[in-house]
Length: 631
Image (cartoon, helix red, strand yellow):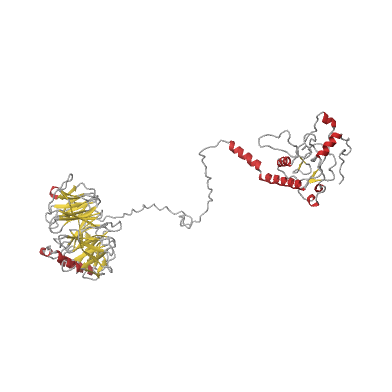
């Protein structure tokens, strides 16, 4: 390719010696790498426009008058906050390709500085990076490097790089990278995003913005309904509306009607012959003499020997009632063993052990709530008296085959009772609200003779002194007191004796069976306490305290330690120990014996009863099953 002479440029006027010298100083030496451009580089699609490398002539007159030719920058420079500066290059879009930018001619002052001929790489990089982010393509035309383009700004203008006719391979690659980076950043649209962010930042921030949830537009689905559901007759005539029926109120504990109930077994109602035979047997065994129930005391060694002979056999275990047992009673007959159990649902089951298990059990339902206390009348055992939480006391009379109502209260719930008189004509009844009632069975009606407030939160058990029957002991929440029925009144009753030492609720308190000189209490603080009541002082101290696990939980009936009617100083209580057992203690705190059988006793017997004259012990568990130990 021909090269222009150093002194002249085309048809222009010759340069002065000073200008020629300066151009020679700043003209780069021959570089073979600039003499050609590879065909591969020329064929790239990214170089679509031509870059004309021209030399800018300088005249001496302009040098003398310090006149500088107009300068045009290589690339366009933008700033984020200010408009274009004075040195900002003008970029004109081509008419042929509106998306391509033409790089304007730029003339460099040759006399200003040694770097006036070719701009430095840092300057070129800075100006190229500020090009507007559009697709810019550049090509190099070697044939027009010596031509002087004097077209106006309205036409496509080229970049004039004074003193250099070619771009090196490094510069071409760098220019290509700059272009590609500009296109990439243009595709990211950073300027638009920054403008949006600035606009959002300038807005006032509002606190506690309430977001309104868009309402869900549920598509209405058409459900197919039969004519019956639409209440339309097949002929198309609407049917009359059915009046709304009130929902029945289901009472968890329905109250039985007042008055006597027939003594009909619920489990053998169809076989009346067996029921009649059972009632006849009950009547016959109740014909006892008063001397037969006289209590005799034997020495301790003999008593312990009799306990060891009492065993539990397979035929002495059976399910008598449906639910958890709350009370157990033994008929005082010595000829036949008849036991009764009251459960949580109000059922009373009687079991004749002289018959087979299936045929000897008779279940009656005289109550609707737990039967918490039950006794055979000591004066006339044909009567079985039972008390329930439903607020009734009933007497099962075998001779008439009815459960007659002795005492009834619609407002109160009963907890326990005992006989005040030897002939069982009067009762003292404990109530869960803390009051006690005196009931006389000889008077007509089902009301009490007296209801007395004994200043207790609740009354769980009441028991009458075996000798001085005007005294009774009441076990309440924490307090255990002895009262005299002769001085009871509606309010303001004071106990004649108070039992101290209990720290939690007391489940039971009973006088010793023969003399009444001892009282045993069962407390939730895991202690069995024995008190000396031979002298009824105002405060009765603890005689013996036996550590015993009484934590039965909510699914077991609470333990109630009772005295053996045949022994003055020994009492029976259930146990949480394994193997499951029933324990007998002496009033001194010594454990005399444990009744257990790993084959037939596998549950906790919370409620127990002892025969008054025979060696028979009955234990009831929380599944309605009775276990009878006998010799």
